[in-house]
Structure formats: C-alpha cells, structure tokens
Image (cartoon, rainbow, N blue to C red; front, side, top):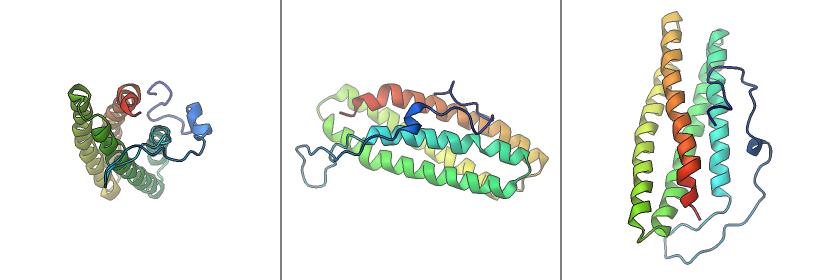
Amino acid sequence: MASIFKLFGDSTAAVPERAASPAPAAKPVPVATTAGSIQHDPRLVGELMQDHVNLVTHFTNLMPLLRQGDVRGFRSQLAAFKTEFQGHIIKENVKFYVYLEQSLAGDETNIELMRDFRREMNAISRAVVSFCNKYMEAEMHLAAMRQFEQESGEVAAALLARIEREERDLYALYH
C-alpha cells in the first residue's frame, strides 16, 4: 500500500481498486457464541481495509493544505483524520480483536501474535492522537510547518508499515 500513496503528494493519487468497489452487503454469519460474545462479520476485514484507504487519503491531504496556507482546511482535515482514525481503532478493538480472542481460544501462538499486534496498535494510537492534538492547536508558522512535515513523515511511515502488516498478516487470522 505504501507504494500506492505519495505521503505528501497529490491528493488525487491512485486509490486501490477496493476503494472504488465497496464490499457487497452481507449479513453477519452467526457462530456458536455465548452471552456477550462477538459474531463473525464477513464484511469486517473489507471495512477495515477501506478505513485504511480513507485514513491515508485524509493524511495525504494535510501537507498540500498547509503549503497552500489553508490553516483552517488543514485543521479540518486533521480533525477528520483523527475522528476516522479513532473510529477505526474502536472498530478493531470491539469487533476484530474481541472476535479473534474468542475464535483463537486454544491457539496460543496466534493469540500471542494477535495480542502483540494489539499492544503495538494501542501505542501507535496514543502517539497518533497526541500528534493530531498537537497540530490541531498549534500556531502554524513556518517553523511549525517544517516540524509538522518532518513528524508527519514519521507518522505516515509508521502507519503505512502497520497497515501493510495488518492487511498481510493479521487480517488472515479473521475467519
């Protein structure tokens, strides 16, 4: 996915085909569950992957807005990114990870892999939200813009690496 998006390039950069064709509507498939457990949702992984596309799109729109001097638009886009990011994290925590905990019961190797992913994402999530909060309130003078460009490059690299690993390794456990 990292090769598809230029971190600070044109916001009209190519978007993966999955963004153009949403997953067909399907009802969640009931599984044997106990009270309070999460059911398998055949659309969930597709939704999470679409979230990734949307997050990258929001993020790639930030620097061009800042370079144009559109601080209001920049803050609005950053707030949209933060909101979508937090929604994605909640969806992963509530629907994805809880279901994996249930479905992988007894598979210690994969449960530990999933827990490592979850711990890592919780740390990344805190850092991303802190980053967003910092720049939503900062006075965006030239030095702050340069600092944002550097820090956002680091955030983007971490998020893109995480997205690639989730889509390649973690989402395969959801069945």
